[in-house]
Length: 193
Image (cartoon, rainbow, N blue to C red; front, side):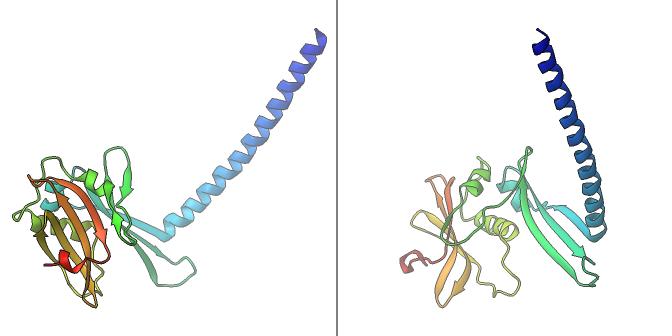
C-alpha cells in the first residue's frame, strides 16, 4: 500500500514539476510573441474594405472584402511592400477565392453563387463586373475582356496570347442557373465566337 502511495506521490510531484516548467516556458513564449506582434504592428498596416458593388451583392451569397496589407521600415528602407487579397466571408470563416493555375475547375466559386441568380444576356454584364472584382486583371495587361454565349455555355474572355483566348467558361442549365464554372487557359476555335 505504501508502495502505491509513494508511486502516486512521485508521479504527482513529477507532473507538477513538468507543469511548472511548461508554464514558465509558455510565459516566455507569450512575452516573446507580444514583442514580435508589437514589432509587426509598428511596421504593418492592414485595411479591410467591403466590396459593396451591386454585381457582387446580387450574384454572390456572401460578403466580399478587399484586403490591403502594407509593410514598411522592416529593414530601415523607405519603400512599402503592398500585398492585396480578395476574400469571401461566409459568416463562419474567411476564404480566398480559388487560385487559377492552368485549366481550373472552380467548385467553390460555383457554390458561392446565389440560388436565385440567372445568367442571361441581361445579367452577363453584371457577371463580368463580378469577375473584375474577384479575379482582377493586372493593370499592365491589355483589356481583352468580352463575353458571349455559345452551345449552352457563357464565355468570359479575360486574356489573349497570340490568338489563344483564355477566361471563364460558365455552364448553365436551360433556365440559366449556373451549374459549373471553370477557367480555361486556351479555348478551342470552335468555342470562340
